[in-house]
Length: 40
Image: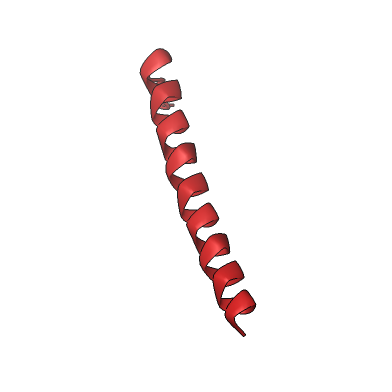
Protein backbone atom coordinates (compact mmCIF):
# COMPACT_ATOMS: atom_id res chain seq x y z
CA UNK A 1 0.00 0.00 0.00
CA UNK A 2 2.84 2.38 0.82
CA UNK A 3 4.41 1.76 -2.60
CA UNK A 4 1.24 2.81 -4.39
CA UNK A 5 1.01 6.00 -2.32
CA UNK A 6 4.66 6.86 -3.00
CA UNK A 7 4.25 6.23 -6.74
CA UNK A 8 1.15 8.44 -6.78
CA UNK A 9 3.01 11.28 -5.05
CA UNK A 10 5.92 10.94 -7.49
CA UNK A 11 3.56 10.97 -10.47
CA UNK A 12 1.77 14.09 -9.26
CA UNK A 13 5.05 15.85 -8.53
CA UNK A 14 6.39 14.98 -12.01
CA UNK A 15 3.20 16.27 -13.61
CA UNK A 16 3.39 19.57 -11.70
CA UNK A 17 7.05 20.01 -12.57
CA UNK A 18 6.46 19.34 -16.26
CA UNK A 19 3.57 21.83 -16.27
CA UNK A 20 5.78 24.59 -14.85
CA UNK A 21 8.65 23.72 -17.20
CA UNK A 22 6.30 23.96 -20.20
CA UNK A 23 4.96 27.31 -18.99
CA UNK A 24 8.51 28.58 -18.45
CA UNK A 25 9.63 27.49 -21.92
CA UNK A 26 6.49 28.93 -23.50
CA UNK A 27 7.15 32.25 -21.79
CA UNK A 28 10.73 32.33 -23.08
CA UNK A 29 9.51 31.53 -26.60
CA UNK A 30 6.98 34.37 -26.53
CA UNK A 31 9.66 36.84 -25.40
CA UNK A 32 11.86 35.97 -28.40
CA UNK A 33 9.12 36.19 -31.04
CA UNK A 34 7.39 39.47 -31.83
CA UNK A 35 3.65 39.43 -31.34
CA UNK A 36 1.62 38.69 -34.44
CA UNK A 37 -1.58 40.54 -35.10
CA UNK A 38 -4.38 38.26 -36.20
CA UNK A 39 -6.65 41.01 -37.49
CA UNK A 40 -8.30 40.22 -40.79
